[in-house]
Structures are given as structure tokens and as C-alpha cells.
Image (cartoon, rainbow, N blue to C red; front, side):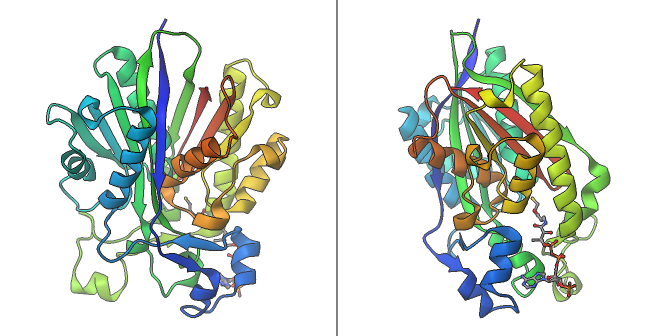
Length: 328
Ligand SMILES: CC(C)(COP(=O)(O)OP(=O)(O)OC[C@H]1O[C@@H](n2cnc3c(N)ncnc32)[C@H](O)[C@@H]1OP(=O)(O)O)[C@@H](O)C(=O)NCCC(=O)NCCS
């Protein structure tokens, strides 16, 4: 029997750090409000010359190095992003060219917002199992600072920029790597987090710019409630489907949107918070990059050991959600 393993991971966050104190000079907020409501102390912000693909490239190079694999071996490249370099071509094509992935590779973007990395994992997992591809590189990369209204205190304090990547391969061994993957979507909740303009429904114009409709709009309280609900459901289902208990899950890596969402999830699942990986204090919400950045850090920090079970659990605009169970 064959399995699909994560052969390497890598991450990159821009050098510039924007602290809560910096934000206090930009909008009417306070360090205390941001920390107590979200758990965030600082976030990384890309420079004016850095686009999403630049962040993606650095994370991808680190993941390839970690896996000891050259770019020429990659035949499937998926970039999950809500902030592509351009409406077209895909950011994946930009990365493919700059990284030196051969032209016979398949390269495309997916739009699943903050669930993008677990969506990409499932797609790559399925494709590798069929034998159609041999080596997949998946990347979650975001320059969210480009879609945030920096005069709107209800959103701008929450987000940051960054990228994380993983290399996936099929191996002839049973019961390791990706054990299970489950995704979901509920478009009825789309209005809770969206960008009104810049797409085909409302193309950019002087009017949309004047109305700031190119920036994201969010109903925070509704997202909070639904995030806890869907993450609890997919986490429980994944663990039960594989005849495990949460005592056997060594580490849960949730999407990093708000530490209070993670605390509520941990409480509902009855899992101690110490078994959740949390780094939102230093990065804010980096959307599709948040899980792979956390995965990379957790591995480096020795929080993941051979034989361990790790559960990834995500939610995002759409609403999208999903979970991945990994055995190392
Ligand atoms: C956004 C969020 C942090 C707000 O926390 P909350 O406890 O729900 O706060 P509220 O919305 O009740 O706001 C309380 C007050 O703080 C104010 N406020 C909002 N942002 C503020 C800020 N940055 N600084 C100071 N005050 C702020 C509000 O205006 C409101 O004032 P009012 O009571 O006078 O109307 C929280 O709802 C959240 O994280 N939701 C999920 C968002 C998310 O994850 N989005 C991404 C999904 S991938």
C-alpha cells in the first residue's frame, strides 16, 4: 500500500514588523484591545516591491531544501492565495518560472481563502495517489496588507503577510503521511467575509476606489461563531473516522485567526490548549499561509516527532473549511 508523505516544509515572513503600538498611530485602537480581543501583538508586512509570489518563492525554496529535492523534480505546483500577484496569470505560473520548475509541470492557483492550504493538501494528496504526479509543491502565500483598509480599525489589526510551503511525495509504505483529509464549503455564509469590487460582478473603477470597495469587509462576530462550529465539527469527524481519540492527537495546528477562536475550540473539544500550536501573537492572520507557517515552526521547535499524529484544522472566507490528519 502507498502513502503520501510531507517530505519537507518551509516558511517565509517579510522582514518588516508592524506592532500594535505602530497601529495605534494609524487608527483609534490600543495594544490592550488588540491583544485581549485577538491575541495579536505584531504582524509581518511585505515591502512595496514584494508581491505574493516573492514570499511564496522563499517559502518554497526552504521547503525544497528541507525535503532535499530540486525544483526540477516538481511536477505539480499549487499556490493557495487570496492575494495573487495578478488577476491572471496565476501566481503559480510566476513561481514555476522563477523557481525553475520545468514547463511540463502542472501549475495553478486555488481560491479557498484561509482554508487554502488544507484544500491544496487534499488535491495534491489525491493526485499523487493516482500516480499521475510524482512530486507536489504546495504553497499558501498572502500579501493581505494589499487588501486591507488601513483606516478600518475593525479589520486592519487582524491580518499579516507571509508564506508557507510543503513538498509531498508518494512512498511505498502504509499508514504514514496524510492519513485523512476532509473539506467543506458553505457559500450561504459568503457575505461574512468578502471583497465587494475588483471582480466581474463589480469591476474596479474610480467609484469603487473612492468607496474603498477593493478592501475586505468582515462581520467579525458571525465569523467567530461559525469558525468555532465548523472547526469543531471537522476536527471531531476526522478523529472519529480514524478510530482515534483526541488523547492520541499530539498536536493540533488550527488556522491562526484569533486566539479566542482557538481557546473556544480547545474548550469544546476538551483538549488542553498546550496541545494546540499558537503563533498568532507574532504573525496575525496570514490566511492560507497560517497553517504552513505554524507547521514549519512546530517542526523546528521539536513539537512534532516520528510516529506523532498532527491534526490541521482550518476555516476561511467562503465559508470554506477542512481538516487533515497526518502521521509522521
Ligand atoms: C473582529 C473581532 C476581533 C472583534 O472582537 P469582538 O469581541 O467581537 O468585538 P466587537 O465586534 O464586539 O467590538 C467591540 C467594540 O470594539 C470596537 N472595535 C473594533 N475594532 C477595534 C479596534 N481595533 N480597536 C478598538 N476598538 C475596536 C468596536 O467598534 C466595538 O465598539 P462598540 O461596542 O462601541 O460598537 C472578533 O469578532 C473576531 O476575531 N472575529 C473573527 C474574525 C476573523 O477571524 N476573520 C478572518 C476569518 S479567516
